[in-house]
Length: 280
Image (cartoon, rainbow, N blue to C red; front, top):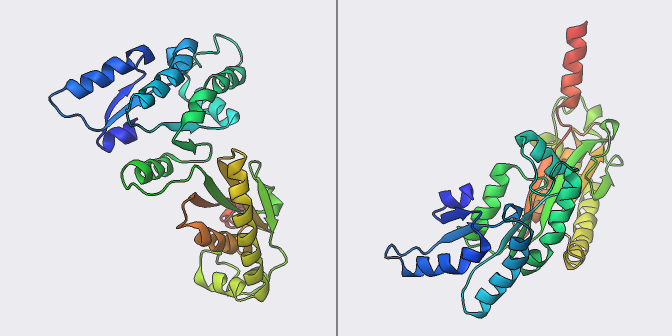
């Protein structure tokens, strides 16, 4: 709501659904010409309010009102973590388990989600990334697809990312670690990137991975999936995995999908070596 407010919308949070038609009528009758309105609806209004919301919004559409529904969701573990960090109690918890309350809320929101114009899964998004997606829809008026891609590089010696949907192992590619001039660099440096991508194996792998994702993504969307985490690993997560993550990110960066990249372990070898030096 704060992001939309900054974008010039007149924002009202937690408006009782029963007052929605009255509020819309008041904005139409206002002398101030309120053209951009954002209303926040969630579980705080109670069970009945959410059930009523789907019917009220459907009726408004039938009456000719034009509006978009932006539906925000996240995984249950992430939502539990957010509630703990803010020290807020879930409205449905009432002294019970938080995860059970969140799943109950998810069930109550089913009908609203079906009507949604846009769905954004905020599980892996930073605030600035969420702002970019919202601005992309409501400010820049770009074509938007309810699907978010996250490309993550990692080192196998530090473990596979727990939230990965697809995992690729690129340890078969030429390793810059054994080249003295490249060893201290990372896949973010042109010298390492060129060394890895000049390999015919790397080029072929990138093409095959792109082809597979082009096939998978539309099928995942049909099944209702809203995000995909693609993890690409090498031994230390510094050279080859970073290079391929940057390369595949570049293939999807300017598509209709939301897209970001993350290099989870890129600094870990340097930090480990620094700690060892300090111990000596």
